[in-house]
Amino acid sequence: MMPALLDQLPVLLPRVLAWANAQAAHIARQGVPLNAPSLTLARRVGVVHPERIRILVVPAVPAPEDPELRQIAM
Image (tube, rainbow, N blue to C red; front, top):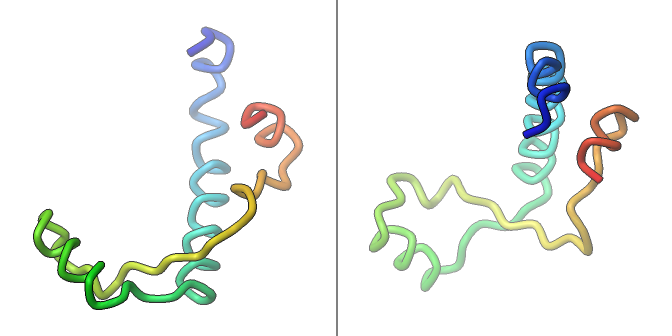
């Protein structure tokens, strides 16, 4: 990680977390639960609550709207 970016982490991290939480909420609302075989696999590999998992197929991971976060992501 670049030193300048490392210095900005205390300011950037809350904005990154807000973006990630917004994405998680969107996926929770719009995503679909795992099907039976996927639930079985998830349990087999140790997922404690696979029924909470939601899948949302998107053409690309949405970039943050925040211009600074978008630039860093690119």
